Image 1 (spheres, rainbow, N blue to C red):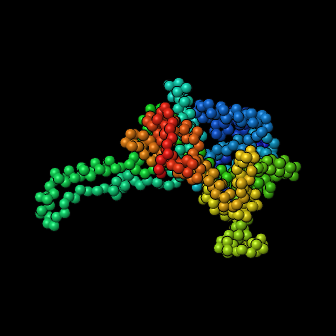
Image 2 (image 1 turned 30 degrees about the horizontal axis):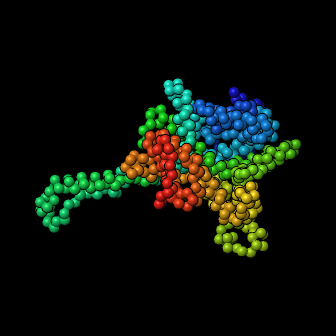
Image 3 (image 1 turned 180 degrees about the horizontal axis):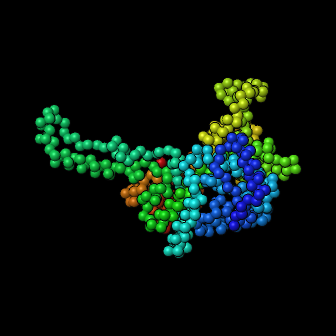
Length: 495
């Protein structure tokens, strides 16, 4: 069970919170709880929440976290929940300097959750909602059996990325009534010059027949859905022939997917912002002389290069620092962009002092994609030694493919767009008038993984109850992948 803070930890919380407010951070009420390593691993396996609905995945995550911690391969330093009040956990065995570092880091996350636009529409009472979800799923388990419910949760979780991450912020489709009015066509009949001749030339029975003909033609030509639907889960919830319990569970999975989506959209920014503030608070306010070496060791460990992947803590904090320096020195705008004198660029300093204000603005209005697209510069890429790497089959090893800025930036943006997942739309729910569900893959140069595509189509078919297919590209050619419930097939098509 979580423990409340000791008097000493309460004093540290008050101290760190005071520093955070002094620097202008704006956050929800912050609640810290103290956990043992085992308890922290359990909460981490639940995605940071004290309780979730029953599923084997949480147990698998717990085992992985426990073994990684036991063998010294990793350590959870902070775990914080986007909630109001904001909950975070402290590891009981941590040294005091670590507790202060974690607290400072958490206040950075708390400020980001409250102020970044991507979190604006998230459920701020998700701790309670997760408990409610757990209760609802357990009721169905008691009624239907754990195996049946868990099998469907497996299917639902395999589809949790098929949402429209931008749906909370934009309106993709017009109001149905407005759209209907815009495309409405009336049966006018034959043109007549004299009004008194109209009933004779266009009798009521004739106009009614023409009106019915137009309506029938509209129904036949009307696509379903009329426009591509990015939120595949919402489409299934509305139109798939599911049982009540299946619909409720899929709805739960979709709701949780939308809750976690902003965290995936802002991983670099969020961790960078929290790291920036724990570094600032610790090095300028909270650090004692005897804690310097321990702090430096643990901070360096967080910022270290992660084998085979980008470290969001490192990239995020360095890019925020770079933005702050550029706006302090005026290294932006038309004059800066047009300056090709390297000596002048190195010594450029207009002493604007606008850096701190600028990074607060950035943390509010950007997500990872726009953050990287707007502020990643060639100078930053060189300084941080960013590159693209590929696997060399001949040498049987990984190697640097290029350091060219545009390719590095495009590769990074590609990995962040839509969580790095393929963009999938529902384009036809009555394909070839057979009631089959047809999807479309918005190809961005990367082919679908055949294994994942096959399993996804299989699980979609299990919910739709009829064959499901997807149009994509493979080896530069149009491809239709299809699953009819028993077999998977592929065929080349013209796109």
